Image (cartoon, rainbow, N blue to C red; front, top):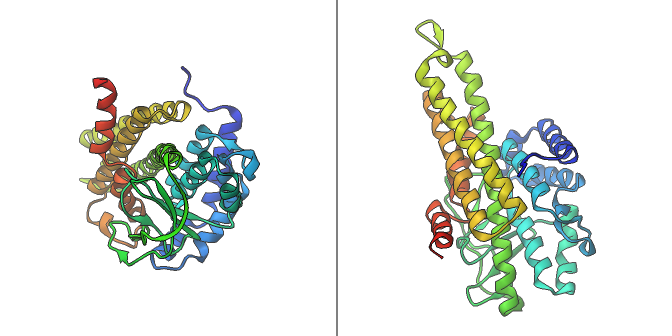
Length: 327
């Protein structure tokens, strides 16, 4: 199988990269971490104008169809740029409501998510108890283990996070009951797979950004009168990081083409670990300066571990892959 994007897909990715490159995303991330959501919402609206969020919704709800490959390509670019906010969660909500089979419910929420006029966060069984950026999201959805879909009435107290731009809340378990039963359980399972896939794509983009910045730094920093990038040990570390990312890439594309639960788990596991490795390499080669908040590198460093664990920790994803082999 040929895991290469088409010309149209590549053009879409380049459009997003160009938009994000001119958007001063680091400043937006810092504002978001401080509770100032205006720049992040403006960026989301501009991203919606490219059709990005329409790729997670069928045409009857103003979408372009459920297109996981194109959406994954887009989310690699979001990770590369370090875009903040519940972008994965908003896409997962669009999928959840579209899969539920309740046309009225989907039309109530999905068109606004597609147009960028609204955002959503979400908690699902198997995805962790915390809602990302519930204070900034227009809607906060929860699905209980019993299969109850609710619109949470409140977002609770802000919890500590490794990444200040990933603001975590434990949502109110009560709220408006939207749907319940086996259909909710089935739709939630599909939404969980999409959330894992898109988080894997984000991990790939974050890892690539960390590696690119580290390579540039290795060319500039000198020790013993020579750039550290010329030292064999440094070359090996960078090469190992690149290989991890390149091995993760086809797993992400394979999962996007055929989003079965074990394939998505394998992609999430591989991309998450590769991203975390890129962060450790970046931190080691930058030295103490890598810890400083003033350096933009820190914005990506702080994302690596939370993204690795979001929507399925490495142990959870590994168990999912092993279940298929044992079966």
